[in-house]
Image 1 (tube, rainbow, N blue to C red):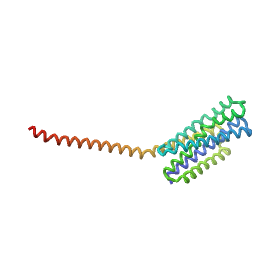
Image 2 (image 1 turned 45 degrees about the vertical axis):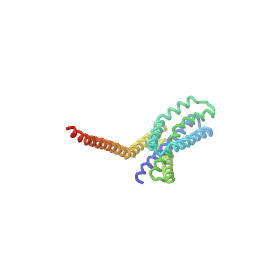
Image 3 (image 1 turned 90 degrees about the vertical axis):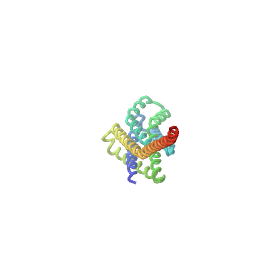
Image 4 (image 1 turned 135 degrees about the vertical axis):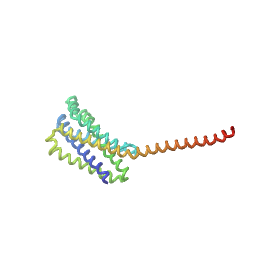
Length: 238
């Protein structure tokens, strides 16, 4: 259990960052496209659909037991953080271009804006579930615990963003905090991936060394046999 606590901790931070993004991005998009029932529906639909597609993609990717899901999780978190750092600038630039568009094109643009980061967010749960299931062989416990800690992180972010973070740091500062959390989670996951790979690397190194020794031993034995066979011939010739 202690060995898995770090996973729960980083996934809580991941959920915190994801909800912080959602709050800030929704406010930024509402500022660009206005606050009405149509814009609210478009933004929420785009978020939910992106998360769902990402979860499906993450499940497909993690089905192969040979795939390094911790490394994938690390790259996903890094991608979310990098997009987050430039997200507000991208939103405002696209908003200036699409200003005055009708509802359907606006929905398509909004969906595409948040599709990539929300897909990445949605893929994190199945990737970590696959990692835990490989360790404890318990799907229900893995899904339930990870979903709980991720939702708990989102709940903390929902309260903290409204009560403290947005008021102190603003939208840009809040985004930087979320991106820093993503990059931190990415680094921790990568370190865990490398540590998990070490036993396999050591085993492969030892196997290669043993194979080399065996080949060398076989070669020495063959040389000795050949030398023994040549000695009688030399004596006969004398």
